[in-house]
Image (tube, rainbow over all chains, first blue to last red; front, top):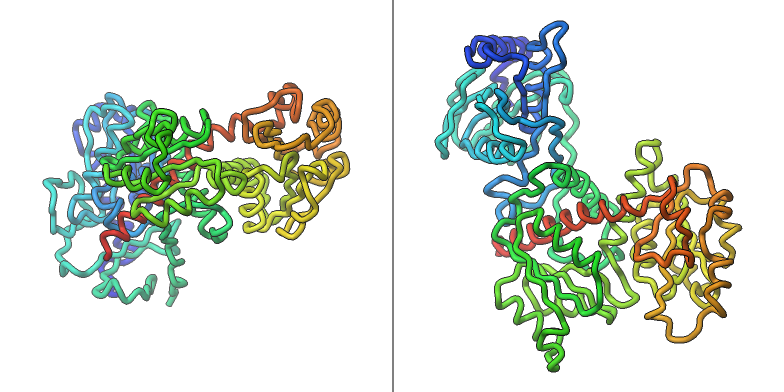
Length: 188
Length: 327
């Protein structure tokens, strides 16, 4: 696997995304009602890490949810082998709130479409913004991100692998040119 | 250089049918429990539905009376957005002499994706699974198995003991009552022993024959001896409808020796979990004080049953659809 983004650069992307979110005038207008939701698993980690930076001292803790989109995908039943879902953890409602949705890599747009379906089951948000670490292009659905860490152009068959602490032992984003091969080597 | 260990093989569920727990590996049982754990949250939402099985059709084919299992499967299918067809035997051609296989094939010709079947004959779901291409889920076959009840009991046990740091292999479970006629006892026995728990079957000699010791469980005819040693007491219903002859002299005598009341509960460990598959004969195998008391997990069982059945429908219909695409 070749490294695309080093640990230090991942930290930079997280900071940059945090700045972009803070600079959004609609979010800045009502920071107390902001809710963050990450697509499991690494979108969830992004939401937690960026949430820690967005947390204002003395304010009540930001609502951060974790969305499992398995049950909302357009390709689960009959198209993919049946894996075990992780489950959704959303202990709050989204009605009339600004929401930022997090995913690690934006590619076809199908995951985000599924996530939007999932989100609205928890209420009617005032608006939803999308934040991604990597936008690799290759959209199949009309979806775009509002906050992007980095745009990358990679071969269609290649896979971008994102590792984020604390669930992974390190921060790193790499390019796996042969995803079928399996061996993963990270954190050089 | 720091190299990650190879990613753990993601578990893939391959079964189109759930016919019994006897066939399942420990990994498969845990996969259902984990899926149920993930799906449990759906029932806590204001919109209690996910679109995973949209466009799929589940038929409830019940040849025996059932209210809770049938309702639970129906609601589970609806929470996964499947359409549900309720097939009542009394209003069907079965009463006109149609065979089980023909009934199943006719339902399949209507385009159903899963048949949930309850039948008084052991092996009926297996027979159906041999002739249809859709998924078949056993909702109780004679005295053989009731796998979703076994799974929801396992789920409730894990939900209770996992937060206390206990695994199945740390647990000792007593299954008490009419073991001979009980499909719930068999499914529990297969599931629990597969996951490493110790099982003791308890009942009068007429309802709990010593031959059951051959299935990997202890057999006892004295409840008072067993109670102080176990973590879970699963009280079975006395099934008057299945008792061919008088298996015990009187209800009062059964209740005196094998009923769970408050005095007996005091013999148990303070954190014991009391289960009952329902419907209860209050005052016979269990008193109201115990059934409604703090050690009881009975209503949690009902609640967990919904999530377990959502998981089973999701996994089996999904695996069957995937297998159909592959070939």
